[in-house]
Image (cartoon, rainbow, N blue to C red):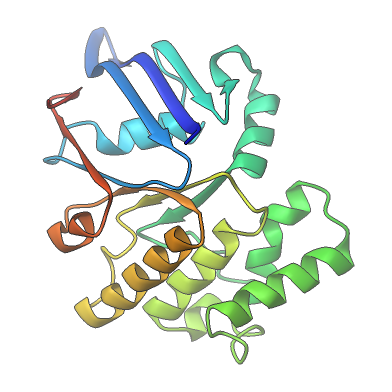
Length: 223
């Protein structure tokens, strides 16, 4: 299978005042197309930092990140925004939905940024929300929905531009166990349909469903 993601000697150091705080130390990682992989590790191990760098939300201090064979280290901020919009779908623990917008409008947002024509994006948003069992919630705003419904809207939004890679940061962390299992089943189904998923989780049950577990400790991958 082709590699959808590669990191080469990725490091990250934050500058706090006059002090350098190293977080990642030479991360070499590859994820194949169609893989379902989990990143696990204790708090402070660098999981979210690594996910942000992979997702082009942050830049490494050194090293390279290749998304679908594109070397993101050579890109401008505007070009990185294009890669985020076209190649990556994000799912967050806190949903990150726009409270004043309807479910349909939230799913449309990534397509608006990519200049998808209105008719096409409305059709795509409605198809995705129906796929996730939200055909009767399209006009509801996030505060009018349950946590599980909001996370399903977030999953629909992540798929809006048909991304090569889905990045999920503790997607069940704010949900009760029953709803968390429902979201996990959706992620498994998406993977069975060929989606590549990289998930940060503390949940051993979720990790146990993945093809591979990547363990981080003190900013390095444990072998």
